[in-house]
Length: 136
Ligand SMILES: Cc1cc2nc3c(=O)[nH]c(=O)nc-3n(C[C@H](O)[C@H](O)[C@H](O)COP(=O)(O)OP(=O)(O)OC[C@H]3O[C@@H](n4cnc5c(N)ncnc54)[C@H](O)[C@@H]3O)c2cc1C
Image 1 (cartoon, rainbow, N blue to C red):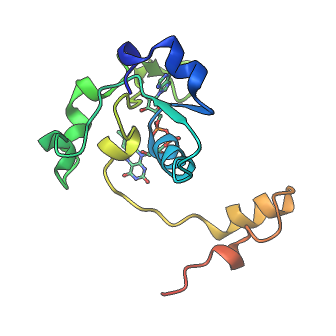
Image 2: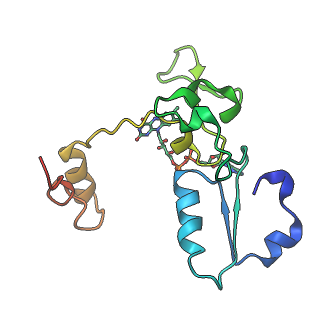
Image 3: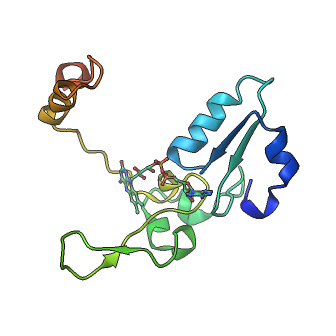
């Protein structure tokens, strides 16, 4: 549901309100709503892309949506290092969030990072041995 469609009664009647229908929020809302007795309200600031109405640039296997400013929060910029000139900072604002606009690039994490998180106190089992891919 988009912001303009949200009524106060929708919020009052919901058991759970999920703000942001991005990669995490949409999946979370879907899982939570598998229990038919639970009323889940999913709110997305960007445009909806209902089944059967997903725009062609989002459906494109190439990251065509990446260059469509309609799917991003306007005016965001950041500097990666102190003193550097700000550059555009793309943050998605559309149903599906980043998963609707991303490049589908998958990078394998560094084993040393996984081990370091475990050593810093993350639950046992997130180390590199656990996260190693099962196939080469
Ligand atoms: C241009 C781009 C390319 C990328 N390419 C890749 C890639 O190739 N491979 C890869 O693995 N990852 C990629 N990523 C990263 C990946 O998409 C993100 O890590 C992932 O989508 C983050 O998921 P998320 O649920 O945390 O947030 P998001 O997917 O960003 O979702 C957040 C959602 O919440 C909404 N929202 C925020 N505030 C509010 C509010 N107050 N009210 C209502 N709604 C709100 C936003 O509109 C957005 O839809 C890319 C990201 C971008 C932006």
